[in-house]
Image 1 (cartoon, rainbow, N blue to C red):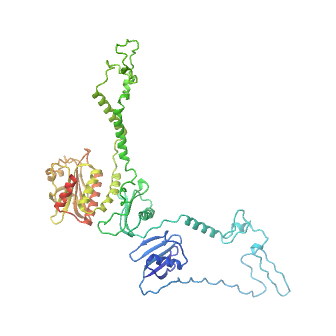
Image 2 (cartoon, rainbow, N blue to C red):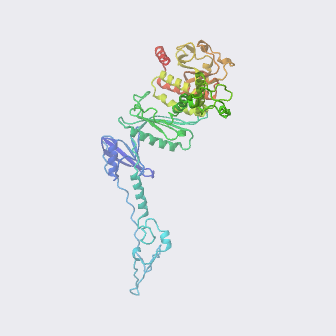
Image 3 (cartoon, rainbow, N blue to C red):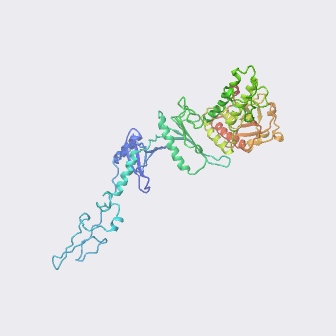
Length: 570
């Protein structure tokens, strides 16, 4: 197999590229053979390699050389030697002296002698070389000396007689050899997605899926992800709220992948370093996510004092007001006949209250239990801070980071279940409804329902009905904060489910102006009202679900819909 290899310089685009033709089994041996012909050695580890449709492009950052390798016809002539460089024009020889009077030199030599042998002629003796001259160098000679002239020993204290550019170049090469760049495996971009920040979504989002050869190791895939992230962050510059998702697969696919990716990368600028996950490891998912276990730890820490409080009830100090109450002196009071019993005297650290007449009688068990429970609950409440209300930007950032898992699902019903899970987490509601659009009948089919007293799966309604038609026409979510005073919320489908709408959000599931379904949430569990956060969030989720259905197709089979609904309910 023959290969064309074109060599060009990054620093001098005007120079014509050098084109060679060699014989090799693959493109990598062909590139190595051409480099050997040019006198270049070393592995391709520090090269930046890009897989193109018509060939391969490799860039050597050290020599700033670009190599473009592509297949050549079988009858292409083999060129195994690079063209010879154009020789530099010879230096102009000085013209012979026409008369006895020489032309004055452009640069005055340090010393010149002119001994005369006869009255009719003169002979010039050339000046001695600089190393033999005994004249001390001028100050300007050292300070203004060109970098290519070696410095004489002893001229400048502490300065070695070396060529300055050669030393700098040698230092750079030694530093590069000491820390070689990690090898980047040959790869191809399978898909990419870019979304810049807008008023509704403040994120600068980038998503890339790479394909490498089968059998690529996890470390090699991680190196590729980190290298691509480094180049991407440089290109993004000062963009704010950057979110990057990357994945490396060992096979190309259309629609859903056949296997899990070798490695994935998620970088949220506001959280710091990127997180690389290897999904094929059995214990890997989520273990590298920073701060994931912190809420569980906080909850466990909050529950721990509550469990420990009843065990310490005998030594629990009384409330401050009881401690501050002075205890009446009992030294002068004669001891009762049963004063020798050591039981009451064993609790001197718990003084009784002054208003309690029977201080020696222990309180009932129910009172002690209630006191301990109250103390435990107060400790637990004090250790758990109240939840902070998230802003619209924070919610959209979390949704954008979570929605990337949607691309790894296989069917529209799985995608609907995934969206329902996100809505439950981000917008807790009493009822969540997902409808798929039937384009043949121009109807909406209910495929998922959470909440309500009557199950209405597979129920249908026309896509021109009330709020559904308004949402599909506006291509944005419609929010009704107070459904009790808005006549638009008087929808028959909600009444058949046994629902009393108090606050409603209806969002279209669309892509490229084509309807694919509807998302609805009713009545926040917190008891408040829906607003801008839910408006932007449901609109975004509807767009993502619509894009998924447009690429993977919808599902209206009743058996599959009911089977999934029963599985979720169980």
